[in-house]
Image (cartoon, rainbow, N blue to C red):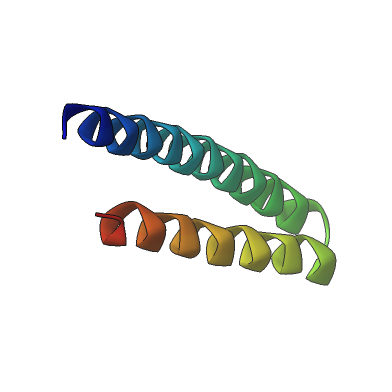
Amino acid sequence: MKKKNRQSKKLKSKTTRSVILLLQLNYTILESIIKFKKENDYCIITLEIMAILSLSLIFLIKELFHKK
């Protein structure tokens, strides 16, 4: 029982670290979008990347809270 509990804690900590890294990446890309939009009118490619990162973040969070 204890070994199973340790494994789930390791999994949660890895997933938590992944979520934090992805949040930092999202923040960095969001900053670059804002800087880019000040210089140019629109950037579809950067917005698509942001959407993909947001979706992956949603799935990671879902995994984090639905694992038992």
